[in-house]
Length: 369
Ligand SMILES: *Cc1c(COP(=O)(O)O)cnc(C)c1O
Image 1 (cartoon, rainbow, N blue to C red):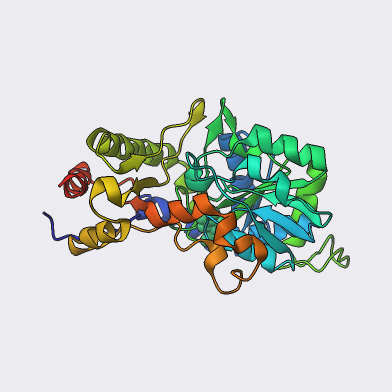
Image 2 (image 1 turned 90 degrees about the vertical axis):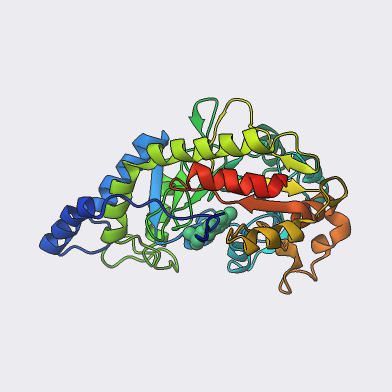
């Protein structure tokens, strides 16, 4: 067993020398932020790559989420999932919106559309689902509910860069979709994020809001925020985009190796690939059921750690369990039986482009022991 420490993820960096010319150009132009040339180029390149109409770049995904809710003036109550990264629900809190937690599906870990309707009240204005691990939500059913009740639909697509359903970007679903380009994600700009919108007017409004609400030199149309992506980030994003297909391909090989080695092990449950979906292999979650497997999830987590393998218990605890949210009625574990169980059993195994297949084999033999 190697002594080398393995983390759950590691960013994929392009060759440093390829980044230098971008920096030289920034130094020459002295245009560091505020919709510079690399920012404009990256927006166009991402529209082309993802197959979407409009994108607005942000300094990070959390500010993009907060601004997406501002864009469509969402208030009151929003139905969301407790099984996600805390920033999903925090973005509601920062808008003074009451989060209403909905249970998840046992086979996808995404918000359960069949449980949304009973949570709708006169105060509900929107649904904010998350494509957890980059696996698409049941977008058809969720859209039908949103349309029927006249609710906005804002997707947290922070895990779902480059994911497609039936050959089309997942970000074409919902009123707005939010991406994160944080260092730990499939595609990164160190820190970064974006809102995908579907018409020019909305794109314009988002761009005003991320720049203090300025709609011209002397015109301010709203109390906007400062959430602009700078030129160094945007330039890095352009370079990184050249390597992202290669990065996803390497992730795919690792996911396949895990599957080959772990399928059929009693008490160790893998998520199935989804039909008609192009995956990005952002995460490799497994469920560990102590009764059949012999060890609990936490025991497996510790065993791996002892062998210098740092897996992560994404997502545990549930967002609804944190002190700021746990007194909400919808946070009660009686209302969230599936999410509560999954959070106790789930473990995300290391997956990143430069993770060697021999380390994957080592991890699998530890798990199969
Ligand atoms: C990473 C992430 C965010 C936050 O994005 P940042 O760019 O880190 O601010 C929000 N939601 C989910 C589901 C995430 O994984």
